[in-house]
Length: 349
Image 1 (cartoon, rainbow, N blue to C red):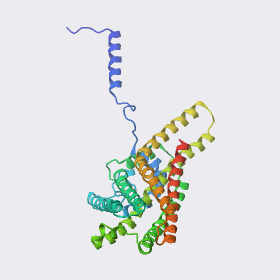
Image 2 (cartoon, rainbow, N blue to C red):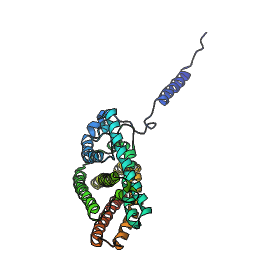
Image 3 (cartoon, rainbow, N blue to C red):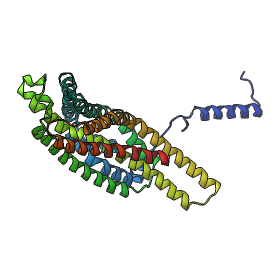
């Protein structure tokens, strides 16, 4: 005989079953971020387009100099791969080969220190070649957009999810100016290198112990000229990313000035600020290796450049002085830009 259940017991059982069903459902707190892709693309289409227009020209240029491979049009933002695996493999091989050439140039410059009297001159060359090689290596690890969730890809995926309706026109204008200035330096610097090779006889490949083969005297200047892109373009990438972060905080500040000081408004502003801090944290993880290379290598490079200005060579002293003064000025300005843009973001946070 089935036992009878009182109405009270049935109600309790029903409530327990309902609680069990509710507790079995996945909550949104278990997942840090869930968003419908179509809604995200529609709502953030202007922002995605602006980010693409800011980064695309720079990434294409970085591809040419072997410090970036993968999608340059940022199609990973819409979860669509722009290139086949074979194309990415070929370009990855090209980039790795160029970075290996940068490292070989550093080995040549560093080895020449032990065979020449101008130790500080070859130390300056060594640090510059080291800077190129480290920049290329770090960029190939941190930046490629190939679907493997590099730090740059995580940053790009998260910015449209956390930030909405931000006008980046000023950043686009400044990035174009920076790109134009970088292109001018990419033209001027190789001209200075060729002048140093011809007039001052500063060719590492033609010095002891590398003068045993004529090819080294050709390869070293070629690697040095191509490496100018590995020297300048990661710095421009750092500055552009800092400009984007600065504009995000400026936009939040403008909205704070327009809102009323009610409790709901303050809560909304607090949530927006925490979202921007999350974006800055991702950017910090992405840029920290590059910034470490910038500071740790650039300061000794600046010191050795200053030493070479003070202590002139006996031959071609005037040309040597002018060349070192120009190089010292370029190094000081670039280091100042790095510290300036990094400091601006730090002030906003």
